[in-house]
Length: 139
Image 1: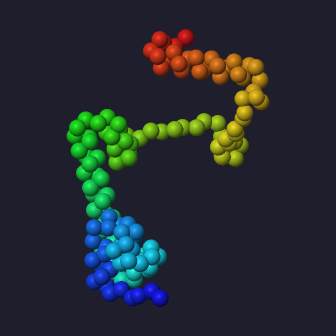
Image 2: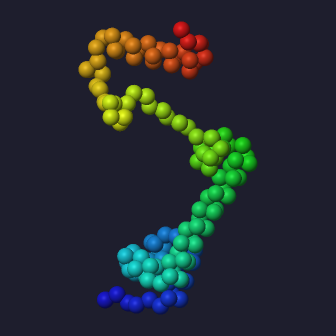
Image 3: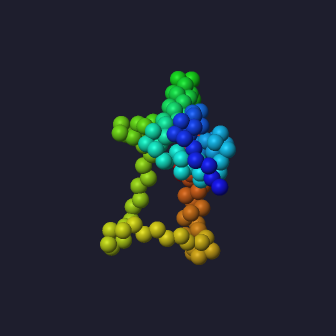
């Protein structure tokens, strides 16, 4: 038989949960689904639980900003590609060649199905990319 929990008990169990249900269940000494039910039972507990999760996001964002201030290039690039999209910091992948109806047609073809000429063209492209990547110039 499942016991009933008071609003104040659930609110106390939510504190410090990071917006995760399992710690709440552990503190209430109940099953995960019971904790989930009580978290969602009242508007006050729903807000408290959501606020716990938002605090973790705030903390993570602070760490991202610290990494940016420390000059972490990977984090800087990631941040600009997500938060800086409105300023043009995004990686675009354009696909050319649409079908007659305007839809993009993507077809996967195994290498075994390619002709010798097609395989040769792919090999030439791969060689060019490798040369460009190594800084030896394109042919």
